[in-house]
Length: 69
Image 1: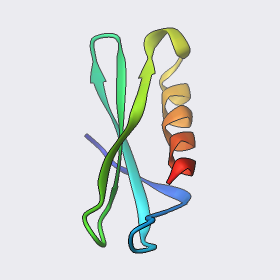
Image 2 (image 1 turned 90 degrees about the horizontal axis):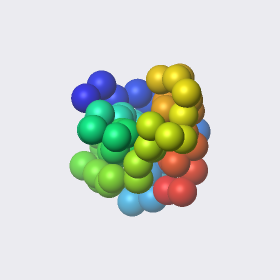
Image 3 (image 1 turned 120 degrees about the vertical axis):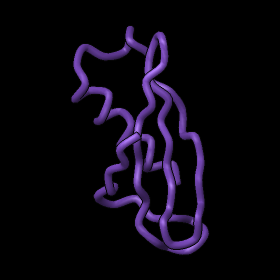
Image 4 (image 1 turned 60 degrees about the horizontal axis):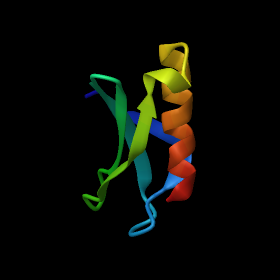
């Protein structure tokens, strides 16, 4: 899974930058967030195939999930 640095989300535990990535599964993608500074890791949710029309939309939805941290 390739991780991408989030533009604005920060780790609640240490204040470090958060990175996000998606893992493809049969009917969608699992979205993961992690912090390289303190080791924080969390599955943020999922994006189903029915919700999006392109891979760019998957990335946009995954990035939006970072605002919850």
